Length: 164
Ligand SMILES: CC(C)(COP(=O)(O)OP(=O)(O)OC[C@H]1O[C@@H](n2cnc3c(N)ncnc32)[C@H](O)[C@@H]1OP(=O)(O)O)[C@@H](O)C(=O)NCCC(=O)NCCS
Image 1: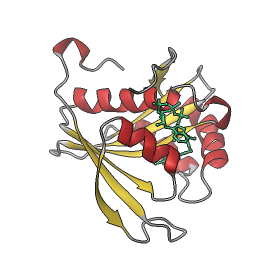
Image 2: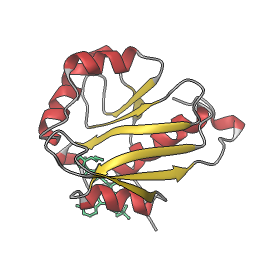
Image 3: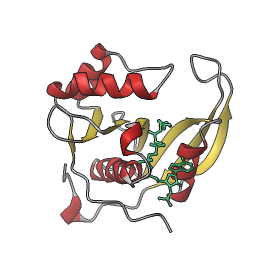
Image 4: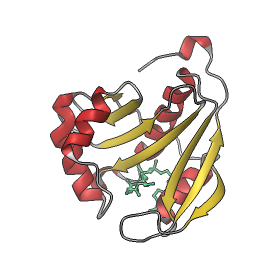
């Protein structure tokens, strides 16, 4: 069974989080980084959700979900937990929050891409019900391949809709 996560404050990012998001991105990813302008756009854009853990202005971890009009599949675009906060359930908690957000928006599946050389993330997704559906050659800027994963999402109970 997946580990029970510690209680984490997960909230929607605001423009005040952009500096913290940039710092997390820089510390976490070597390529395909989200830029300052892109963070601003994603936070303001109604077809994206940026959820973070941490106090206002301080970001321990973040997840980005993209939506398309009239599409019932959501895309988990990015998930990052600061190195200091890993291994305590925060990644799993953010993933669950992203899925709840997608359900609340009427989506019935979540898809994502992950580097084939990222065993920690692959383990996280597989433990939480994601199934590998495709290999995408040269998906990343540095030429690395991705695996695509998909998970069906059960409908949200009415009481859980639009919690965040
Ligand atoms: C992948 C990542 C988000 C996991 O975050 P985390 O907070 O450490 O994850 P959790 O503590 O919630 O662990 C959840 C699961 O992830 C897996 N996992 C986490 N760290 C792992 C590691 N070092 N090795 C193997 N599996 C690992 C385990 O399956 C764990 O399952 P468990 O809950 O049954 O123990 C984090 O390591 C990270 O940000 N990595 C760098 C960025 C990245 O790779 N993002 C994903 C891009 S697709």
